[in-house]
Image (cartoon, rainbow, N blue to C red; front, top):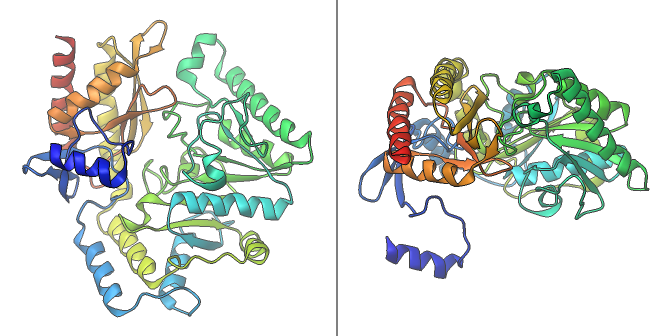
Length: 425
């Protein structure tokens, strides 16, 4: 292990991120399990990319078969990508009609922002002050920009909604909702006060990177109405919330709003780089005319074959229905534990995306990132892999492959109880 660690630092350069205080070497995956170099099995509670399971044979076979026949760029006609695009838009609301394929969420979000800009003739983008929508180009400037400091004049942030922490203000849900909307409106007004203008607002429907906070039920619907009144487009970043993660196909369905542009990524290819930006046909065609967008590795026969295989597996295994059947009891079991444990401040989420807010004290709700890190490391020792995240680095994130079952949840709860007991001993 130390030898591999030294080689990694030389080959990749020090600073490449890794999980856990002592890194773990993973060599194989199967369903919702991962295996290390010594053969130890771990329950995977983190990786949403292999949504239909690690080592899924149907997806792997589709990938190998298509690669053995043809994989070529999309300047040639191929029925596979058309079939996949038609099937994909059919899973969305009626306003989603056409697709621009790419290879990563970063690329797909770049396309979405460019699409909003080309449609409106404006440049300004609004996001939350703890957003993450990618790691390069314009989307990289959206990351944690803060509500008062803007590193890019074309981007402005607003505080993300959070009923748990902001409930200390002792305002009603409606009063909090109005306050959040006013802050979003102020960010839009800031952009419109200059020649930058306002092109659109991008958000993860469930604010996954922000820590999966509970939000007022009407917030996203009213936020979308605000964006439209101000002449902008609403972009729903479904990279983490889409593909049945919330118990519905899309996070925007979970939060009851209708976006103009939808971005998809991570789970679409179960490991193969595959992402998409979808919108109305006029929006997509305006974008294509304005940019001449082309991506050598997107809209390919290989992407189509794998993308279709993933959708087939989701349907074959009934994963849309099983997500709530497994996730709801797990969330309730964690809530019961939170009621009796001083550090478990809040448990929230939907479907198979659950967050546990770790605090120093439940009364003050002061975040405790140290305990969150310790808990993640302790769970690793007990055979369960997850991590911590959120705007304050104090949220334990549970986001397993969709093939995660009640049996897997039971294994995790045993490890969770043992980890808490050892940390508190």
